[in-house]
Length: 106
Figure 1 (cartoon, rainbow, N blue to C red):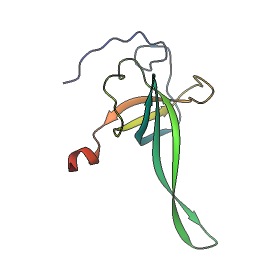
Figure 2: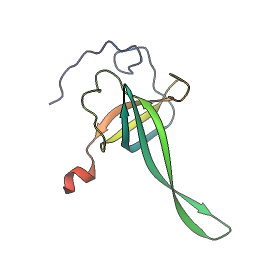
Figure 3: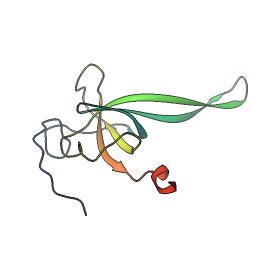
Figure 4: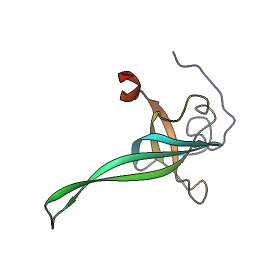
């Protein structure tokens, strides 16, 4: 059962003034810093000239709200959503932690 944690973060989409809208991505946490996370996800693009598909990796920086700060670790799968620019590089916020398939296999 989830605990009710009240956070004092003004950039929290649940308890603060930040509205999450736009694109939503799922990815694996590669690096965890102070209230910031770097996630990586793969996408498939099609090259018409060669009639082939290729995998591409993308890294995005996201803000971690205070209420989710203790729940997220490196290697977890998280869902992030687009929001207003919080800093020069951070334009996304972590919405939830998903149950990763990697943790179920091990």
